[in-house]
Image (cartoon, rainbow, N blue to C red; front, side):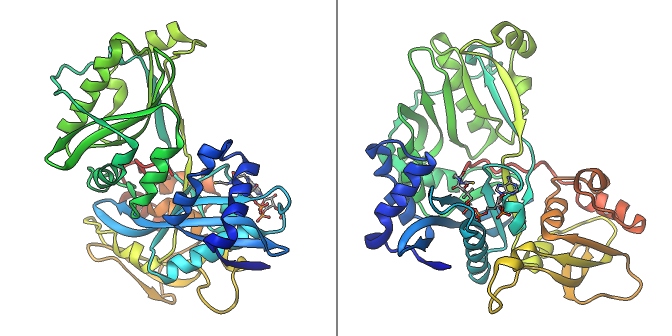
Length: 406
Ligand SMILES: CC(C)(COP(=O)(O)OP(=O)(O)OC[C@H]1O[C@@H](n2cnc3c(N)ncnc32)[C@H](O)[C@@H]1OP(=O)(O)O)[C@@H](O)C(=O)NCCC(=O)NCCS
């Protein structure tokens, strides 16, 4: 396979062509932002006849494991042109990018999936459900004053990025480090606007939204706040648009159960069914995640309950797509100790229960995406009876939320 680092001079037009072919851009205005997007990340290309036909882009960042931030590799683009499908490019190149990121210190990788199954082949497991709520802003039960906001424009991407980096985090919160990433993200949509609040030069809290026509819907794509009070100010601001805007769609912010702030949510869903402004609540696990550094991840679990240990035999399907020299995934035999100071040592220890699984499933358990007691049914994982109560207790974690779509 002919795979090499992206070279802007040589490959930009070819990558734009791939993006046209997969429908990610539809006109020259949209295509003009591909360059910014690639500038912000690490891209490799797979070639046929020396022309780039597959591109895999990653971006460094961080992800919260409870309160601790771990280095993240965000896989932000995997695309194969119409003529290069099913040659194995995307799978191999994703595995190579994971190896590169792991070598550079990333502990976790995450991505937004096009569907379940494909990235499982390189070790990803499905993430937690995220709620998307579409509501009439005038029904928000937020009885709070808000100040006159400032307009946010696409050119404000450095401030928007800084606000996202400094936002109130939660288990699973992802941050993409290169600020240019935000330049590309704000550039994509048509008819977008932002509103927010500054303290001096610093944008403290804001939302960014796509909009349609006179009455909406608004679709909020980015939101950041440093405190719950700032979140409530943003919600009060959104409510103030209810005189004109009939519906707003947003991912539920992780610090609130949004349905509790809606007046008569079921009545409004019934009454707007199949309308342009339909009120709805859906959930979907759109992201996938995998461990790249077992030691760093396990050490991040500070468990204050009774300490326990187990043997772990871990397999990593990404290894099948990697060259023999270099990073081979996280497979192997280990002893895992969970407690105030958790850790991993190589090899098994005598007399401990054995957990055998792949990195996909172990990641889901480790991030609390599925409970140990659910794993038999949802992941086909048989956990030794001697271990199940300990794993159930130690990995009963808050629901993950990336609070940054990529
Ligand atoms: C997704 C995409 C990148 C795959 O590209 P590709 O280079 O053809 O992929 P590969 O050749 O490496 O792998 C294809 C294999 O994955 C399998 N596969 C694809 N989707 C799958 C799924 N949901 N579940 C399980 N396997 C899947 C295929 O059946 C094929 O298997 P085979 O080789 O045994 O026949 C390509 O279809 C694409 O560009 N799609 C549009 C853009 C997009 O959605 N990108 C993903 C963004 S998250």
